[in-house]
Image (tube, rainbow, N blue to C red; front, side, top):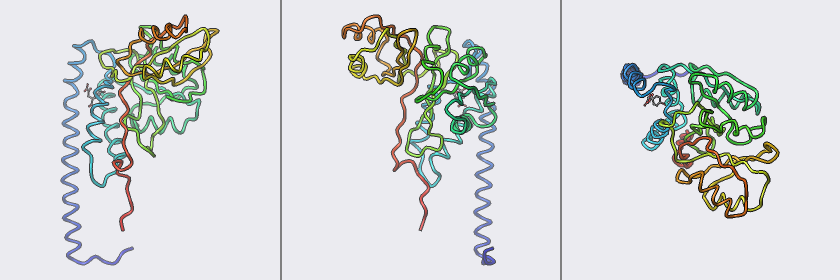
Length: 291
Ligand SMILES: O=C(O)C(=O)C[C@]1(C(=O)O)C=C[C@@H](O)C=C1
C-alpha cells in the first residue's frame, strides 16, 4: 500500500470525496425525477394510441446531442453506454419488452451489443436465425428484434419477412454513434412491429425482388445514392436489401430499374432508420495515459 498521506492531502481527499458525494446525490435525485415523468409519458402515449414505447427518432436526436456536447476525461463510450441504459430502461418501465437476438453468427457480440444498448433489466432472448427473431417480434405485443446489419449468416433473404403493412419493420440501426473501436460496434438492425409515427426516415430500407440479376442494377442503385446491403436467392429469383436516402421513394427505384431494362422488379419498404453519426477518433475521448 501507499505511504501514510500527509495531513493536508488527507483533508483534500476528504473534500474531493465530499464533492463527489454531492454530485452523485444530484445525479441520483435527477434520475429519480426523470422517473416521475414516466406516468405522464404513459398517459400521453396511451392517448396517442398506445403500443410500443420505443421512439427511435427521438433517441437518435438525444444521442447526437449528447455526443456533441460531451467533453472532458470520461470516454464518450461510457457516456453513450450510460444513456443507452437510462433510455432503454425508461422505455422498459413504460411498457415491458424483451430483445430477441439472432445468435447464428455467434452469441458473444450480440449479447454485448444488447447489454450495451438495452442494459440488463430488459430481458435478452437468443434465437437461432433471423426468421425466428422476426416471428418472435411479430407474435409479441411490443418486443424488439436484433439482427446483424451485415453478414447475417442464416435464413437467406430474411428481410423479405418484413414485407407487408402488418409485418415487423426495421426501426433503428445501432450503434447510433459510429467510431473506430466502439466497444459494442457490431452494426445491428432493430426490428419492431410497425409504428410509423416513431420512425426516423433519414435512411429508407427496401427489399427489391427480381426474377434474375442484371448488371445494370448497381448503377441504378448508386445513381439514387443507394447501397446494396445484401442479396440472396428468393422465390426462384433473388432479393436485394437496399438502403437509400429518405427522399428516395420506392416508386423511383421501380421507375429507374425499368428504364435500365430491369423488368419485373418489386420494390417493397421494409423499414427506415436515422442517419449514422460518424465520430472521428479525435472526438471519441479515448482515455489516453497521462504522463
Ligand atoms: O420521449 C419519449 O417518448 C420517451 O418515452 C422517453 C424516452 C427517454 O427515456 O428519454 C424513452 C423512450 C423513447 O424511446 C425515447 C425517449
